[in-house]
Length: 103
Image (cartoon, rainbow, N blue to C red; front, side):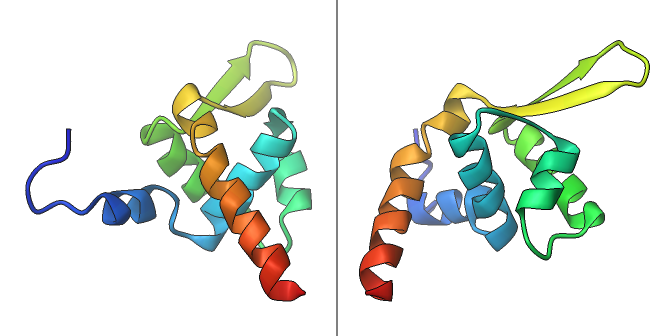
């Protein structure tokens, strides 16, 4: 339920409004599970610090799930929660619009 005075578009922008968050979402929608290094390599220009900050925020917002495996060396994987997966139509619409604009 949306509180009075709270704009749903503003809520969405808060959750996914940065360039980096959108690219993280794109990557996790294309490959459901990725390690930090895979995400870092596949997103041009993102620093480790920015990737870490955005992944932490997306985890706090329950969009991304961080799974740590008790192995040596430790293995950490990132995937989308159901809430994160529900953003697929938005990302698909942005992709389709971008393709039309590019033509």
